[in-house]
Image (cartoon, rainbow, N blue to C red; front, top):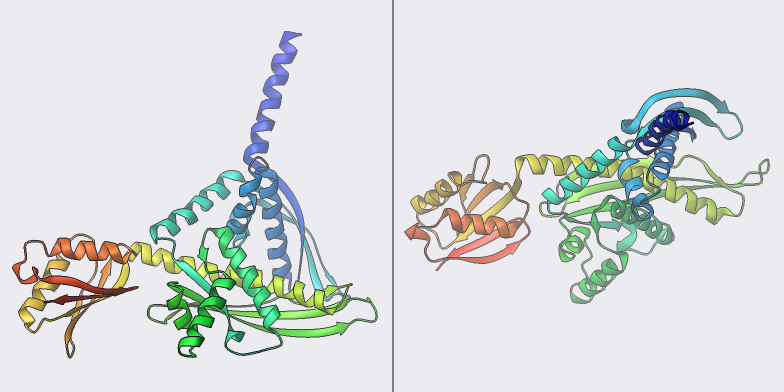
Length: 370
């Protein structure tokens, strides 16, 4: 009898270990094209895999979902398409797959995103609707889209600016100058990056055959670097035709949510690529020194930074009307660390004993020599 128990023990243990490290999922996806349906099925498989693999961490489950569903194929092993067909009634493809989901693959990528955000100092992101600058009947739906995108960013670990905070900033700016430029709002919110949201909603109305109300939403996102107003990514995604049996408003809401998540996934991929480049190459800064009139002193400043650890790449120097301008790259995205490094690099340089920090505004740092 003891031998039988001993054998059963070794039969049971591997299956328990396997259930903790990998799980097999079956899911069905729908889409306007066969490819869209396959991606939907993959995303659903990963979400279900997360729920099955991380049941002991319920508080972190939603965070994990948000971090991995933007590239579901990266977590699927031994994928098999078991069924695919086109539905003439809904005009959509239906694809069913079976695949293994690996716990270790999920955890490795989650850690990578967290580490990257830490390396770039977790910059705040402002998501703002294109309709904020004027009254529009779609404002309620664009606000919904902004909230959905903010929630997605939050699950990924990004720091975002709440809509209430944006409204307060807009009211303050409007009372002072009337200006509500999106970049100005982002600067006021101290957000190094901002994303604009524009929606197009096509309400199809009630289908007499199905009795359901249908809508299709398109969400266009553009991401910008607040400091220099350069674009760092765009995303344009559609919900496809979405139906709801209740009423048109519910169909509109469902369509907006689906398109918002799809576009958020795409824009986040591009933002993370930008962060990766920044982490690898360093962050760009503009340094201005007021009070320098001698070219040789300006060149001494440039040479001091060139030979100091942390300043990477070439330093471009130019003479302006009342200051010297230096374009530099530094390993850290934190301006305070750049300032410290500059003073360290100039230690012992007699020409810079009276150098003082004048002001900092994001990646623009001003010094003056009294």
